[in-house]
Amino acid sequence: MFKKVTVIGAGNVGATAAQRLAEKELCDVVLIDIIEGVPQGKALDLTEAAPIEKHDAHLTGANSYEVSQDSDIIIITAGIPRKPGMSRDDLISTNAGIMKKVTQAVVKLSPNAVLIIVSNPLDAMCHVALEASGFPKNRVIGMAGVLDSARFRAFIAMELNVSIENTHAFVLGGHGDTMVPLPRYSTVAGIPITELLSQDKIDALVKRTANGGAEIVSLLKTGSAYYAPASAAVEMAESILKDKKKILPCAAYLQGEYGFHDLFIGVPVKLGAGGVEEIIQIKLTAQEQAALKKSADAVRELKEVLKKLP
Ligand SMILES: NC(=O)c1ccc[n+]([C@@H]2O[C@H](COP(=O)([O-])OP(=O)(O)OC[C@H]3O[C@@H](n4cnc5c(N)ncnc54)[C@H](O)[C@@H]3O)[C@@H](O)[C@H]2O)c1
Image (cartoon, rainbow, N blue to C red; front, side):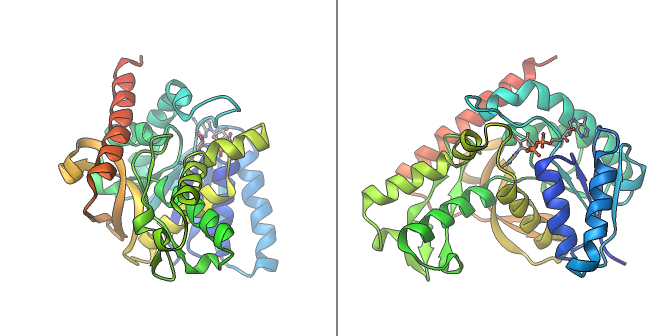
């Protein structure tokens, strides 16, 4: 029997994640949305592509939660995306309400699932999901660092004209303007980019990475990025479904690691069947630790905003 992943929100990120999960034949997929017909229509459309894409994953669309019962993973993408000129933080009051409602509904039927949170503002939504689910911290994980690192990798490969397969990159911190790309841990065929690019070039790539989401929003004009975000969520899901124990940068709940307490923040974690199986602590320079603190302060501020919401 295939494993089961429920994707909540059948919009751009959710439907693309469903497509990638099915086409990689990682699991059966349940797609849930509040708009009548949309999850059903997208699931059927993807099912009709299956003979050509050659997979046997089953896709089901629904407006209620019964079909999600006993999911191994739940990916939450429900909520509104930003428009040009908006920051991720502007979405907080609308998306916090949606996140609370969908989390409470879905965890009742899948009490042992791992939650992968995608909706923005990401780190704040992880706090909402942790509280609403009552799950242990290792089973609530935010998707941001994998996407931010993929963007950094894409820009490094473009700059050096090398295969993206040779690139590795690390981006820590919150999913916002204060994210912390780490050039000295970012490599091409094992060589740190600090050996291959001038500081000016690295600074420009770091800036483009931090601004990566806004760059796409300004091009699309309606809605935000979804191909790369869906790929990132699916990479996390794959590591959990196959118990691969990949080390990936994810938003994890820190209780003392890196000097932060009771806060979701992007750090390297080992992702396996149990969700976050280990938080990897790497040595940071004073400058990197200060940048991470700035990022943590921004997440803490949003946590305070959450407390004041009705
Ligand atoms: N973490 C990241 O790196 C990252 C990257 C891209 C997008 N996002 C965020 O992911 C979210 C989704 O983005 P998108 O582009 O797919 O947006 P979208 O508008 O295309 O899709 C969102 C879907 O959520 C549905 N929805 C709303 N309320 C719901 C509810 N109560 N129950 C079920 N479904 C509900 C909507 O009907 C819609 O179909 C946004 O908040 C966006 O900012 C995060």
